[in-house]
Amino acid sequence: MEDPAQAFLLDVLKHRSASPCPDTQPYVTLSFAQSLDAKIAGAHGRQLILSGKESMIMTHWLRTMHDAILVGIGTALNDDPQLNVRYLPHPPETPYNLPRPIILDTDLRLSPTCKLLQNYQNGKGRRPWVICAASDDATPKPKGTSASTTTAETTSTGHHQYHPSEDIDKLLRKRSLEEAGARIIQVPTSQRRNVQGHADGTASRHLSIPEILTVLRDLGVRSLMVEGGAQIIRSFLAEPVVDVVIITVAPVLVGKDGTGYESPVVSLPAEGASPSQRRFVQKATRVFGKDAVVVLEAVTGGQSV
Ligand SMILES: NC(=O)C1=CN([C@@H]2O[C@H](COP(=O)(O)OP(=O)(O)OC[C@H]3O[C@@H](n4cnc5c(N)ncnc54)[C@H](O)[C@@H]3O)[C@@H](O)[C@H]2O)C=CC1
Ligand SMILES: Nc1nc(O)c(N)c(N[C@@H]2O[C@H](COP(=O)(O)O)[C@@H](O)[C@H]2O)n1
Figure 1 (cartoon, rainbow, N blue to C red):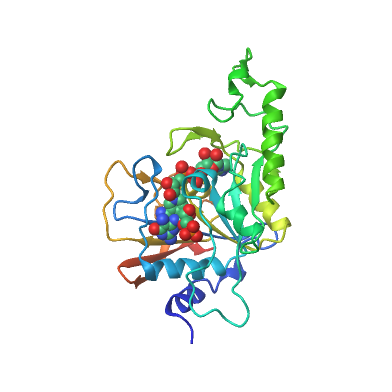
Figure 2 (figure 1 turned 45 degrees about the vertical axis):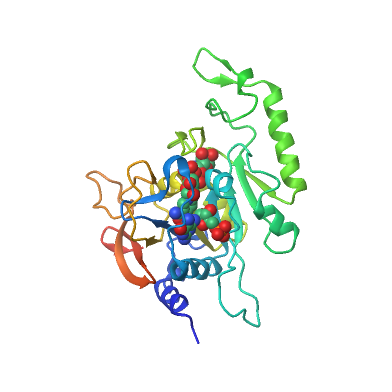
């Protein structure tokens, strides 16, 4: 018999195969848990368990329905997540699909001893893919992204120049991640919103979301679940790439110091907005335990995409 969360998700995801560009980018599901005041974490990015048991099981069903699951390096460093499906009931004869973990990690800050790599080494998880900035990327780097930024100089155009020691640092980090089992994939940084601070007070360049999606589709990823954190949610919502948003709303208030993603998921198209810009409309809502799970579908010009 189907689990209620599994049945709910199979229904809301049934239009997956009608993704607008199935050959050029994966179907993208953005999913996270938030409080009533739209916070996804506590002050300074402190991890909060917002989902109750029932909605957490829903999230694990959602994970198993995707080829890959993506988080930002802020989340990977802060939460040390496993991104697996361990809460699913009754192991079936055929094992559940384990999504491939993908980390957006511009400057390769991921720890080689993180749980995702340990699980892979122990045969309990798929090989993590770490997406970083292409090494010939000329975008200026903000302070604090690398151990060797103190060697940076500023050119007459205001761009920073870096000494080879910085590349050596990154190469060493790349090597130790590869030795721990990670596959490193390089993509260009974004022209749109390049540098932003995040919850722990540091900042780093943003990778191009459209480029990442093209690369992932080329590598065989047909469906991608994006879990966050705050900056990743903002970046994905800023591009016309998200097909469905599934938000677990926990009946708690975190307060103004909590970490929010500050992006209106449900919005009217802005005046002068590009015709391809996506807005989201409510498709289904279901209560799991204490939480409400709200499904929003992307709409372009009044039509479902
Ligand atoms: N409640 C929930 O469902 C979830 C909560 N979280 C929370 O979110 C917090 C982490 O959020 P953040 O600090 O904002 O980190 P984040 O996880 O959003 O990672 C941001 C970092 O990713 C890298 N990056 C590369 N390309 C990027 C792009 N195009 N756009 C954005 N970032 C890009 C940059 O280094 C950037 O600093 C943690 O406290 C975590 O607990 C994370 C996931 C889900
Ligand atoms: N669905 C959901 N509810 C919450 O309350 C959460 N805090 C999160 N966080 C996300 O799940 C990751 C942890 O995953 P594992 O339990 O380690 O498998 C965390 O890093 C966030 O991405 N999600």
